[in-house]
Length: 160
Length: 280
Ligand SMILES: Cc1cc2nc3c(=O)[nH]c(=O)nc-3n(C[C@H](O)[C@H](O)[C@H](O)COP(=O)(O)OP(=O)(O)OC[C@H]3O[C@@H](n4cnc5c(N)ncnc54)[C@H](O)[C@@H]3O)c2cc1C
Ligand code: FES
Ligand code: FES
Image 1 (spheres, rainbow over the protein chains, first blue to last red):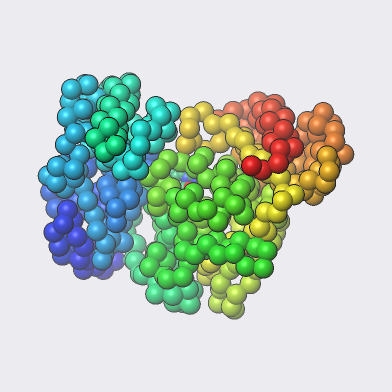
Image 2 (cartoon, chains in turn yellow, red; image 1 turned 90 degrees about the vertical axis):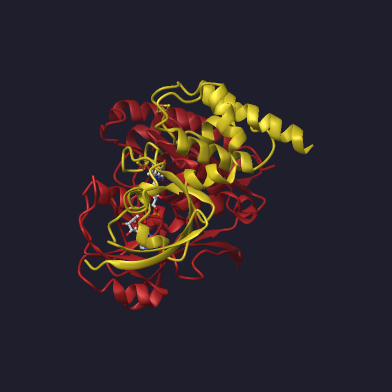
């Protein structure tokens, strides 16, 4: 099982590493690159804790192989956070208690950001549906929906 | 858990993929949304994954000769956003939002959903309800298989170990096409407990060419042929009764067979109503 040399962009920086084919993207990010903001829960696609952006789309880090990302762009919560692009969402999560232990939060933020990038103010049902693949065992979800809705309102107001 | 070791190769073309699949234990890797989950749980042990994600030309949605062709690598999300599919394959458009969650649909492919052939999956049932076809490339060249012959058993299809599914082909909807779709799942995004994908042709106030395909009720998507005939005769009550003969769902983790049978009747009533409505 030969290792493969891969070159990819992670949070805007070029990375070159040798990986075993069986290494999932989330394990590669955490163990090889030390980017531990992406979490590992179920490892079979159900909990959503491992979500990262691959070429701009939010995907499961546990259902993507690192070797498949050769030549592609990956962005993690570290990159999204440092860029300031989701600062308003992070602040809304904090003020509304939309996180407790924080295990689900990085993935929840990236998934919510994807919905908000579509523009407008999505209905609460649409927010729930978009976040339906991200489990939170602490908050009971309402505060998360509140935070996402509040940011959508502010952003829509700011642009109209 | 972590997967057992395997080799990995990127296919450059469909022909290259077929060649790579010549190795014993090789498997196609598309969106990975079912396959990588089974690797992580060590439920499958391929020797080699043949990644087709970089093959060009497999992600097209094209209309030709009264058909719509959807390439194997079209991601669920791409299909969901396609105006072409909304217009010419409204049944598929209705079914897509029921597949998993947005992050699954960002990566999962149409070809993967058909090739995997989960008995509770939406798209195999749609393909069968629409009397579609599957285009396959293998060591002996290309061939086309009708949906009626494609789904053969539990996770078993007409695909051989060296075959690549390259596209599905569906008859494009016309003004008289009627479709209906409904499913019951415990939570949004879960595989269905029971689902129904249906298509028919409107002829005045009557329906002809009724195809009712239930999923989550057996080892493949299941056509309810007596119920189809009853609906074509305008007798919904007879159709619901006929389900007792046409379906024999086994008990599973989601529900008992008896509950599934009852729910199938509930879905048939809902879908029968949809079939009488002209598209907007
Ligand atoms: C949490 C979760 C929820 C889900 N919920 C649903 C749901 O409600 N409904 C539903 O239908 N699905 C659901 N899925 C499965 C999802 O739709 C998968 O994406 C789909 O079943 C497989 O498509 P894929 O492209 O990911 O294929 P892969 O996982 O890459 O492959 C699946 C199988 O098909 C074979 N294969 C794939 N493409 C080809 C091809 N072109 N030619 C030959 N063989 C091929 C592979 O070798 C493999 O055996 C869910 C998945 C997860 C993780
Ligand atoms: S760890 Fe990937 S979805 Fe749970
Ligand atoms: S805050 Fe603990 S799991 Fe969501």
